[in-house]
Image (cartoon, rainbow, N blue to C red; front, side, top):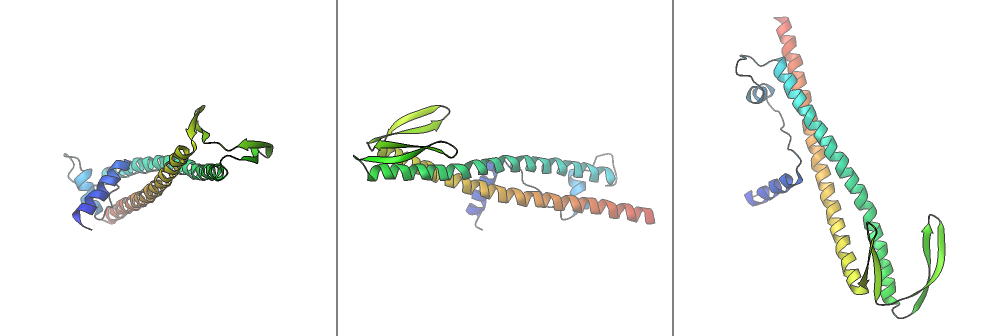
Length: 193
């Protein structure tokens, strides 16, 4: 990877706000650098337990991020088909401009009413939060097309963030296992002496 691409990826990850997990290759060196107390001569169980607590806190943060991203993903997955069906309806109105079309409106789950609709140049879009606005039909199509593209891009970003998050969770879990195993082996060696 070139330096510019690497910098771009790092900036993107920083923008997500997801902390990066350290892979611990040399446990003793890592504990000495990050968790050694000034007055303590050797690295032992206290430092390992502090490290494990720290990594467990990080793992809990990752799980909170995962829950939030999962909710955002479900919302976007529901939003995209809704926007698509609205775009289809607008296209149908554009195709039948100036004519009267008979259609069925959904009133509730499995309850529909037949109606005749005059296809005009204006449509009403429900924006949510009890807000509905009247748009020119072509402006509405442009707005919904942009909203759909933004929702698809957001879904791709969420999927990318979730993949990165899973990698960080796995790295943290592996590092926790390495620290725990290092401490167990250190204690075994101390008991054999």
